[in-house]
Length: 308
Ligand SMILES: O=C(O)CCC(=O)C(=O)O
Ligand SMILES: [Fe+2]
Image (cartoon, rainbow, N blue to C red; front, side, top):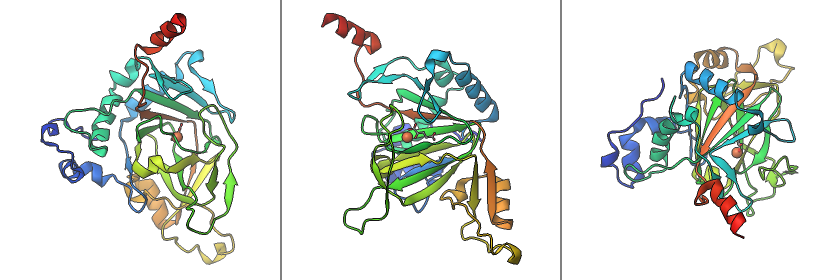
């Protein structure tokens, strides 16, 4: 690819979702089936050159831009940080996200369709969260929370990973085993009791875009296990040769196999029944819109503080 951008059909759009998906069959094509609504996985959303450029820009960022969380993962916030009350203290997004390679606009085109935003209106991405994971690092189960519009897009760079989706315990069904996640960092993640049952695993390859929306955003959790390698098994599993029967294959089945678009992985799953991927350093960029933005930007906050 990269995936074509829709621009000339905007005027025809109504607020009816079916009209949108007809006008943009490519989006419906990328929807991950058999999980709650809605997740879209778009392979090769950017080119290798764009990926290398973005990795370089992120890695070149000045030291003060980085924050380290408890488990060693590093973060950057572009577009401003959130106040304790969930209000964005805005700053302009940097050129490498808006001008070249103009990733934000490309993502806006997709999100506009996914969210059924009317006409030429944009979702209005105003914050980009960067996560850098070394091999063996992950992120504990969490929600991204109500301060953001329930539609986020995550671009993966550098290495694959597996994102796990979880659901909360349904109070009307028998209680499954529970785990309590320790609080990990200042992102507000962790500290919640979740069902120990994972809903789905998604393989995220470098250069892919994952969109999470609706109930997957508002009432589910997501996490990445701290692992150095991932084992994926085919669905349905291929029975291992007789001499391997004893050693049970450990691994996960993924919900987005049909959309992976990587022939090596698909071949391995078909012929050997599993694919093993060593994780390298992965950078993810999560594009989102904080609903409440402080007027006048961060300088406004300073002015407010001075006036008090
Ligand atoms: O790295 C990812 O794909 C997910 C990051 C994430 O969930 C977060 O920072 O809230
Ligand atoms: Fe998250």
